[in-house]
Every structure is written in C-alpha cells, then in structure tokens.
Image (cartoon, rainbow, N blue to C red; front, side, top):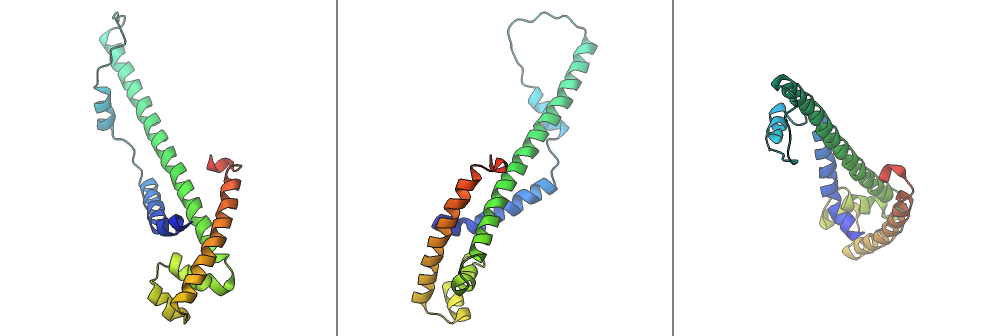
Length: 160
C-alpha cells in the first residue's frame, strides 16, 4: 500500500494528462498514415489483374479504413487506460476519506494533500510519533480496503 501512497501524485498527473489527451485527440494525420503505407509489402508473387485507376481507388479505400481503425483503437486504448487510472485515484481518495475520523484529517493532508510532516504536525497539533502511528494505522486499513477493492475488480467487467 505504501507504493500506492507514494505513487498517488503520479497517478493524478497521469489521469490529468490522459484526460487532456483525450479531450484534444486528433489521431494520426493523413501524412502519417500515408507514410506508414509506403513500406513495400511482399506477400509472394503477384499478377497484375487491375489497371492503375483500380489501384488508386483501392489505396484510397485502404488509407481511409486504416486511418479510422488506427485512430479508433488508439482512442479506445487511451480511454481504457484513463478509466483504470481514474478508478484507482477515486478508490484511493475515497478510502482515505473513509478512515476513522480521528486520523482522517492528518492522513488526508499527508497522503492526498502531499503536505510535509512538519506542516501536518503543526496544523493538527500532534507530535511526530502520533503522526507516525496515524500513518501506520491508515496504511493497515487502506491495505485491507485495497484487497477488497482488488478482489471485487476481478468481477467488475469495466476493469477487464
């Protein structure tokens, strides 16, 4: 659980970055797709059975289909990743806010607010040993909640 606590700021940053990328998604440009089609493919011997205009039409159709498929798959992958990261961030924040009231404020400031130990000690009028005990207690509870969350995620079709 300690790695989730330490990785929380990066998860939030990743979530925000993915959300921004999806909101401003443009996909691959025509030039990028055409460039990818330049690579010659050798599928064995071929006999020319069509004229030049048929080839041009086929290339145009292939290009459009390829571009749409690549962009759709890329967008769907980013959407899936955003959902997974968002679910993890939402779980963590909800779990911290569900901690016993005695430790919730200090632990929330420490884990979610990313406040320093000195700041949390001063704001909550507690000593370092007390804050350390709150943190250990919170980590135990969060570990248990995370185990339940992970076991339920197996049965959640959104997580697959």
